[in-house]
Length: 144
Length: 129
Length: 205
Image (tube, rainbow over all chains, first blue to last red; front, side):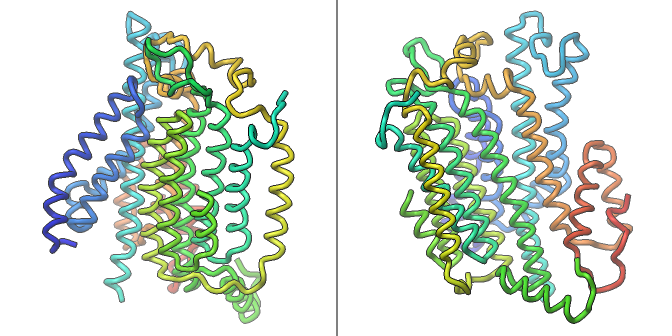
């Protein structure tokens, strides 16, 4: 696929927009359809697109295995961390209204960080699964 | 509670059709990957089962706005969002197991795998894993 | 959608099956938009037609097979399916009519969710992240567990020292220890090694 000029050019044009769109969907989750899950899948799809066109090795250099595995766990920890922050500030687990003086603004903050955590985990998991399947095939071809 | 006949319950009939089609694929086909696709069809029909009763004619998507007064029910949407993501997680794990089975047995047809297992048991005489 | 599913059941070429499942997911997303479920439609399109198709194609490339001709006539599954369908339709006739505003699901909790207490216009996000945030924490953990399970299933075992070194990084991220115990169980179930280095080595903890 690396030799196809059309794919390379279109890919270079589209991938930044895909990643930007993922961020848009993430942050506009409060006002329109969207939110963490959709955004995570879209940003993972952008990087999978890059890997399909330019090769798995290049994609692994841009988004290394270590980063993906850290993203997996970091998202869940971020979510749980917001919950614990609610505990430390005087409310129950996952209470958002204690996160700020104005309880409504506290809700906004809580939802922002929680959705960010979800985005990171979902993106990490989708990427990791793709890497695992793709590299399994690669190594089999090398061994044969 | 319900007074209608078949027409008012059309959404349920469509759901049941898709569900049973998915169930048939899981039961009647031996190929592991096809079974997994049938399972995902089954799961998708359940999404329809939950979301269809939430719709109100004349309502709109549940995004609050001063122009609208009637909203479709947001609760099933929340539950099904979770269900979709869990469904793809299940599919991914199932496919990983299928890949491992392929590497071990050399095939992903259910009949051949059972035959290979039985043959191995007969040859080695061990209780088998 | 009915045609897509019927074609899916009959086709034996697995690549066609994967493409048909993508078509089915897109059609389902369209139906969901018609039912006013815009968040769900976006997720179903992204996940069902996007990620799911990529995963199936990846697995298909690794398995490289066509479906064999079925060995026995599928009368029993067909009979069971039809019987289940009849039972389900009989039960579904008692459920509320389509778009009935007096149905129970519109009565209990939803009027409160629609009150806009927390000033987030997208009610689905508000419910998902705030009213029912605990469920979403569980769901994120499920997604994480799936990722960890895939790592456990499809990992290539290198020299044992390399394995230990790569795991020291995980211990600092606390949570994964529990999950890798589960992964070790899966490995023990599905692993077949040629040389006798198998056995209770587990994950090198």
